[in-house]
Length: 328
Length: 283
Image (tube, rainbow over all chains, first blue to last red; front, side, top):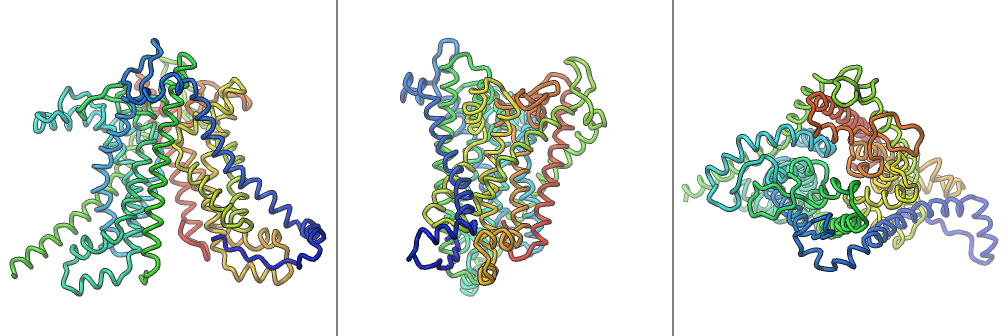
C-alpha cells in the first residue's frame, strides 16, 4: 500500500532519453541508492538464516532428529541432546503465560472499557515505559528480590499447601522453573496489555451499545460481546508475548538454576535454550559443542519465527474486521 | 427474577473491580521496580562510578568508566549501521517501491525484529568475530546495529506514509523532481516521527545484553581502538550481579540505575517529540 504518487513520466517514445533525463534529475540515482539499502535488509536476514543453518551442519549431521529427543548434555563425552533445554524453555514460557494472560487481559479490559480516557492514556504511557526496561535489569531484580522471596516464603508456602501435587514437590531452592516463569510474566505483561488494549478499543461502539440496550450489564457486554469480537487480536498479543518469553535470555539465565534437568516439579531448577547458549558459547570445548549450541539457536529462531508469524496474522485479521465498521 | 438481576449486577461489579485490580497490580510493578532501583542504585552511586576503572578483584571501590565509554562506542557504531539502512530503506519502501518488493522487505524486517537477541549474537559472532579472530567493539556494534534496522525502518516508513498526499502533489506540481520532493518536503514533514523511531530503536538496543556476550565480550580495562574486546554497561551489570562480592552488587545496582535512567529519558523524550508533532500517527 505504498502510497505512490507516480506522476506519469514522459511518454515512452524515446525510452533511453527519458531514462537519461531522469538520471540527471537524480531520481534514478536516489531510487537505486535507497533500493540498495532496502535490499540489504532482506540480504542480511537471509544471511542470518543461512549462517545458522550452515554453522550447525556438523551437529545436525551427527545427531539428526535424535538431537531433540536426547536428554544427555555432556560436552566431555561430546553427547548433545536438546530435550532438557526445549523442555525448560516451554515450561517457563507456559508458566509465564498462565500468570500474565489473566492479569494482562484484565488490565487491558479496565483500560479500554472502564477507565476514563485520560487515565487510560496516562497508564498506557507508564506501561509502555515498563516495556522498555531492559531485561538485564529484570535479571538483577529477579536475582535479588524474587529469588529470596521464592525461597523463603512462596515455595515453602506452596509445598505446605499443595505439596502433595508433583507440580510442587522437591526442595525449595529459590531458583527454578516457577521463578523464571514469574520473572518472565512480569516482563511480558506490558506487551499483552498494550496490544490487547489497542484491539479492544478498536471494537466498534455499536457492538457495546447493542448489548447494553438489550439489557446486558456492563460486564456482560464486555465479556460476551466486546472480548469475543477482539478475540483473535488478543490471541495475537498472547503469541507475541510467548515469542518474547521464549527468546528471553538475560533474566532467565539468572533465575532458572542452570541445571539441565527434566522434572515435573515447577520448584526444580532447570535450563532454557537461550540460557545455555549465553552460558556456554564462549567456553565451548570443541567444534561439535559450539555447533550444537548454534543448532539450539536455530531451534529458538524457528520457534519464535512461527509464533511471530501467527501473531501478526491474527492481529491483521482482527484489525481488518474491526476497522471496516469502526465508528468510535 | 430480581435476585437474578441482583446477582448479575453483583457479578458485573465484581469482575469490573477485578480488572481494576489487575491494572493496579501491573502499574504498581513499574513503580516498585523504579523505586527499588532508585533506592539501591542511589545509595551506591558516586562520582567514582563514572570516572574510575573497575578496582582489582578483592578490593572495593572503583567504577565503571570503561563500561560507560564502551557502551557509548558500541551505540555509536550501532547507530552508524542501523540508522542509515533503516532510514533509506524506509524511503525506498514508502516512496519508490512497488507493493511486491515492499512486502518482501517488510517481511524480512519483521522477521529480523522477531529474532531473539541471543541469536543475533550468534550471527554476529559467526560473521565478524570468527573472520577477525577477535572479540571486538566492531562485532558488538554490528550486532546492536542489526537490531536497530527493523525498528528504525518500520517506524520511519509509517511516518513517511502518513505525510499527506497533497504535500507531495504540491511539490511535484511546482516541478520538483521526486528526490527533491522527498528531501525538501516529505522528510521534513515527517521528521518528528522519524526522530522518534530512531530514538526508540536506540533505547531498545542500549539495554541489550545478550548480543554482546560473545561479540564485545567484556573487559576490565580500557579498550583501545575498535578491534579489542570492550566492556559495556549491560554486560558489566550482568557479570557484577553474580559476583560473590558485596561491593560488586552495589556497583551492579548503580549501573542498573544509570542504564534505566538513560533508557527512560530517551523514551520520554521520544514520546514528547511525537506529542508535539503534526499529522503523524501514533507509533
